[in-house]
Amino acid sequence: MSIIMGVDPGSRITGYGIIRVEGRVIEYIDSGCIRVGEKPMAERLQTIFHSLATLIGEYRPGEFAIEQVFMARNPDSALKLGQARGAAIVAAANSGLEVHEYSARQVKQAVVGKGGADKAQVQHMVQVLLALSRRPQEDAADALGIALCHAHMSQSVARLATGGGGKVRSGRVRGQ
Image 1 (cartoon, helix red, strand yellow):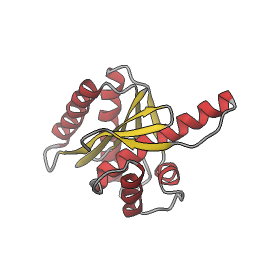
Image 2: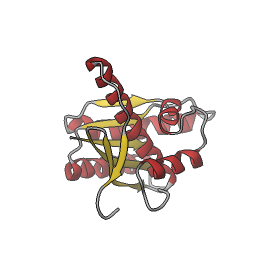
Image 3: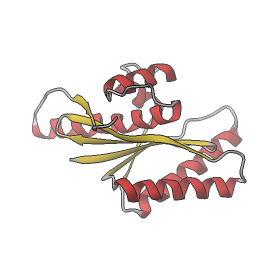
């Protein structure tokens, strides 16, 4: 059994998603958004770091996946995003977690089946794949997508290493 935390970093909203993978069953555990608003940047980064550290302490994931930085049109936005990623990565590293990084295209390909999918398609497929009763918030859905991408990539690597095959089926934790 493995618990995976996925993080969609942002300087104002950071999404997180936590899933459990046991064999070929993937279960939803939790997801949400860390909203930091218009605070000074240092306070935002501190909030992201402490919030993720608290979640890591509570759920004890064995694996941590985060979205890679993409090149934004606005260099200031890209720098702020990079700082938010840094706060998230340090929270994981301080907890002894190895950090796995995936591009937005890889996540969309793993979850939707096409790298150019839009956010609504990701939300819909996350809801379907994890058998959720409602569509998760956009940033939380992206984070769950990152966790799912990591689960699929890890399982693909394991199958290749053992020469096995098969499909992954989804499930959910009671009460979700």
